[in-house]
Image (cartoon, rainbow, N blue to C red):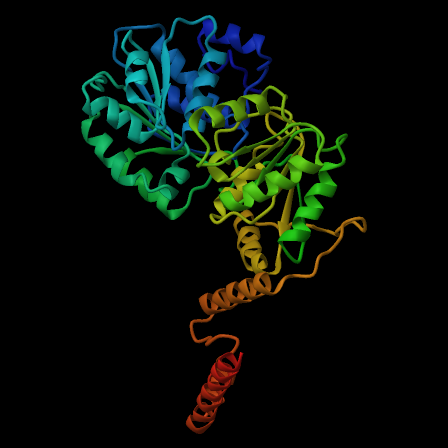
Length: 442
């Protein structure tokens, strides 16, 4: 018998809202997690991004809260980024049109006094980044004495961003008697360690193997020699507006993102926006809103938005670079194929990234098919500086795999005798003297 939201004992006011937004049946993570959360157990939920995990913890918590009560929050949802804080806040608003449950989403980047004013009238659910929650607490504007339910969302990202000290600090001031929920797309040893430290006894709910990409994402890769050829390929792909209807393009650095933005904006029809940590708060919010509203066809971003950006009908994700953290590959491509839709993820790989690609394929337990570069795309010869940079990176990778590896030029260096080195040094000195004489004559 297939589960329904009614059979999961979701409150009637929430069920009414679910029906209006087209939530007909629970996703696998919702079907598995909601009964366990409703039972009062501590839960570790492992689910791919885009599978409905936010609703998996929100729906049973709405039912537990019943209605608005008091001033201080009874639920705290900790998230790693401002984008995810805003997204979870939007999800709460969308799911509770017929409930009087109050919420606030707070994060860094704007003055804390604005958020203090936001929570002052009273809230039931607080969605917060760790730093902003601590700001509000230490200034006396936020009391956590009534917290009965704590959610740590995107736990793997929390660890990547170094939030463990802040989390330990927050746990010291929370009531000891509470239900703890931890959700993550991956379940690495570090995430497991976090769960064991913070959750005591817990039940693990998993709908797919850790770090498994969403099933409806079609993954492909292009082996591309260099940066400029990558730009040519991206420009060519985006010319196909019928297929590439809404695109998120990820770059690993702000510099790459800016360079791509200049080329794409100049050559591509439809508005393009860029998103990275150097952009102001209002600029980032406006870029995400414009993309979600369909006003922007292409959003170029660093991994600042790999999580927390929940836009419907994203046709393609393009990885211009391999992400520095391999788990972020799963989160990046999870921006497409959301809520049962299909999507395509394309990854551009230069020679120095093939080693990293192997690590990602091992992580996701599959080999990504390779596409040929279209004939229309001009392949630019790799410039000397970029070639040297790639070779140095490949050298570094070989040293990691084999600690005894001495480098590509080690053998040549080792064979130079002391006499040879002396001759080389004398030759260098004679050359410098000739250069000085030539300058004097001039």
